[in-house]
Amino acid sequence: MIKVEGYDDCILGIAEVWDGNERVHRIVYDALRIVDVLMNRDGMDQDEAIEYFEFNIDGAYVGKNTPIFVFQSDLEMIEEMVEAFDE
Image (cartoon, rainbow, N blue to C red):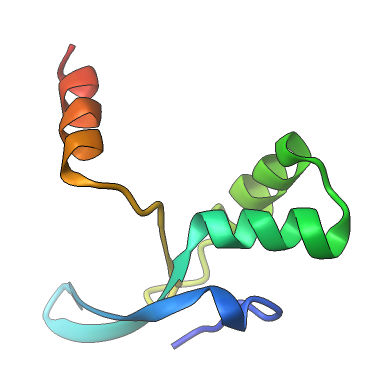
């Protein structure tokens, strides 16, 4: 498993995923908590923090053990997103 240094407080847990024919365990992070850390700890404004997260953290593929970043939401929000994607 690969850990994102400096964001231990943002860990939600572990995900078990299948990569081809093998089971892989990946650390799962709360994406919005990471953005909050960037704003509070590093003094970024919201736009800077989101851009930094998207490019430097979420966008950094480091192999099959790359962490997973979750945007927590409820079922209603998920259904709205699915509906928007289908349009």
